[in-house]
Image (cartoon, rainbow over all chains, first blue to last red; front, side):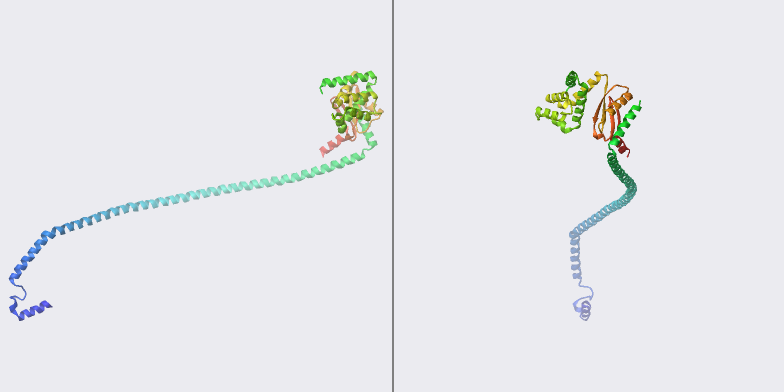
Length: 181
Length: 175
């Protein structure tokens, strides 16, 4: 806007410059030289620095790319290891579960067999105990009856052994001994 | 006591009884005395107790046998007791009876009865046993109430047992 205004004023006042667009010739020359000097200086002195900086940046980026690539490779290796480990864990889990199932089945079979055996032994023992108790009771009863019978017989015999009976026994002995030859 | 000592004492008793002319009576009385000592624990311990004076033990013998045995038998038992051989008296007497029986070519037959036998029963029993065993016997009867009734005769190794006690034992065994 200012340039347009300035140009309008210049049109109105042509004495200030010979062209409303271009500066004075000397100014162009001095300006061109100064710009050239500045550009040459920049190229000569700032260029290497810029190049060096760009090169360093490039190396840094390359290094970062290499590091990223290395990290990726390492990550892939780790991922493979993890996948393999996961596979191993799964296999181990299946193996453990299978072994546990086998052991559980064996324990179950053993337990059943042991229980059957124990039940059979308990039954046999119960039968034997019952039989022994029955026999013992029978024996005790028979013994008691025998004892009482013996005592009763002894008492009855002793009571019946009067003089007559004693003499009969003696005479019977003499007779049987005398007849034995 | 050794066999030799028992033999010596029995021979001494035999000689004395024979010299006194009553061997049969003496050996019979001593046999009964020996069985009584065997059967009576108190009498046995009294006659063999060394703490009791010999005179007292001989007095016990005289009191027991006085009027029931011949003077010779009493003196012979007192002799054995006085010599401190009361414990061996049964063995000495048994040897004496054997000796006396041997002199008569007889064998000792010991008969146990619950009650005393009459002379007639003793005679018939001796004849029956002699007939049964085929040997001449010197019968010795011992009254033993523990057999309850009947008789048991022992001749050497042979035993003829027909006692009530044995029958009861057999009956108890069967029951």
